[in-house]
Image (cartoon, rainbow, N blue to C red):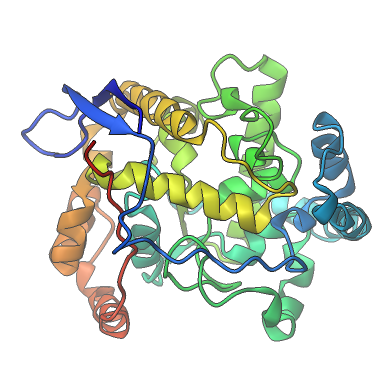
Length: 385
């Protein structure tokens, strides 16, 4: 196993300890310990892919940029996605005609809360916990995978085709469902915006749209288009439930400057976790998504290097962005502390960010924690040479 020395930011601690110190970490190609290796998900060839939520023009751009290079075993998906995407395009136009003016007048009642942090640092858990507050709202899975027309169609999918959604996420043991909190980055992909997440569709091609991780270097026109689609999606979510938005996409960690341009009074919660756990867990995440939602049979070439490069770039941008946020609107916590004392950590978060009476949400948090007391995460190791 070929090891290499890499200088990485040591985001192990928060508080008085410095967050931006450099430390040399011995890294290797990832191999999971046999005793803790998570089971490889069974490939379901005919299972829906997330790209079926795209409208026709978004799908055509994605496939065209990648020269329609689907693996032979996945070629049928091109037909399926094309047919379904046409219906999304029609429904999008109908929704725009029916709701367009009301959505345009929709205002955000409170500044949103952005949960930031690298993939696999506990952002999903924190999203779930903050979403329990009835004073908050969030984009759910259906809204993020069908952003073009969810105001028209969500009622139907909540009642009938539940079999299309697995009960567990493929990369870990957390529950899945149409009504669960979800990453808004997927909504942007379905709406035709470029995103690093498009790499999932064609994993054997070079990483796609890396400039959209931090939105730096975009032309004024491209940046304005991104802002328009992002805010437009959030307006529709808010139109449905006019409450404070809780948003989670790890990509937002590198976009703080742009997010502050859109929402100057936004709150930010940064969660960190031991990078020795985060790195192999992130590699497993992408492998799982490539297998489950890729349109090619993945080879995983260069994946570890890509994860490391993204890690460094994301935290460089996050450190720059932190300096722009008023300290009263920024809170940091460790994943390890959150799972050890979730009530105490959440109460401290509420008090620091001024999110209102914590006692109002405490019973729902306690109920959630009791119902999920048997949850166990996958374990990973980067073995020594």
